[in-house]
Length: 248
Image (cartoon, rainbow, N blue to C red):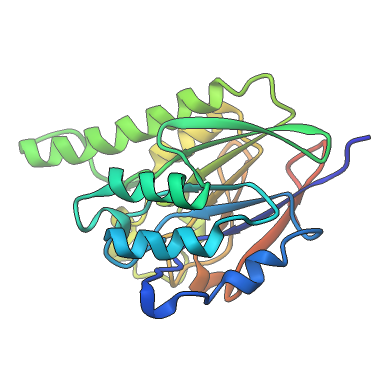
């Protein structure tokens, strides 16, 4: 018999060797509390291999599956592929980028699609693919990652529940509290379009440390900002039932 799916999620933990073990105890206690742990990017401080190994040790052997996307901090050293490989090989983490995975949780087929995402802003205050080549490249990169998320979500059409996992925000709602001037660098409406078109039931992101936890896409998908400075715990916990769009 199927029941509600319990999703634990956190982003922006920014681990390095001097913070090893900070979340380990809380993560080990997930057994019985959650069915899956989602990590919404900025797992390291500067994207070094040493920091990635600290994150991997934090989540290795947990009693629930762990899925993640990388964030901008995880790209800082210019070695995101190495960071992802360490998380996979040493931590058993499923790292998503324009890709998806399907898990059986609480008797349901749950698909999780992920991308780091990128900025660009929101309707009325967004960048456009016009002018200098640098601006065009900025918008094209954001669009490419959003399209990857859309395709990954569409590939989960046979699932009972679909979750979109990103680092950058898909909506301005969860940025409330951040300076308006930096909204274009915190997220993009292109992600929300991908989430709505792809049929997600829940969207989870990080990145906005001074933002707000709860938001909604135009299509009615609940959005949750799980940046650790926002949720102020080792993880936030949400439940998805058959109707899906009523997370706790």
